[in-house]
Image (cartoon, rainbow, N blue to C red):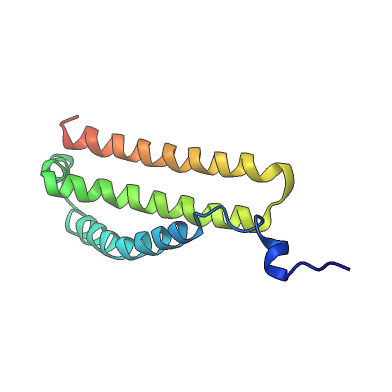
Length: 125
C-alpha cells in the first residue's frame, strides 16, 4: 500500500517547465500569421502581372522586404512548434528526440533559404 498522495507520485514527471511558453508562442505566431499572410496575399495580387524589375523594386523597399521576410520566418516558427507538439504527442521511445531535432533543422533550413532569396532580390540580384 502506497501512502503517498497523488501529487507526490507525479512530482518530477511533469512538463519540463516550458509548456506555457510554447503554448503562448504558438498562439502569438498564429495571430501574427493572420496579418502577415494577409499582407503577403495583397502583395502577390498587386504584383501579379508585373515584370521582374517591378517586383524587385517593390521588395527593395525596406518595409516591404522586412515584412516579406517576416512572412516566412514567423510561419516557420509556427510550423516548428506545431510539428514539435505532434511529434511529442504521437512518437515515443528512441525516435522522438531525433525527430524533434530534424524538425528544428528543417524549419531553420526552409526559413534561411527563403530569407536568403528575399535578401538577394531586395539587394539587387
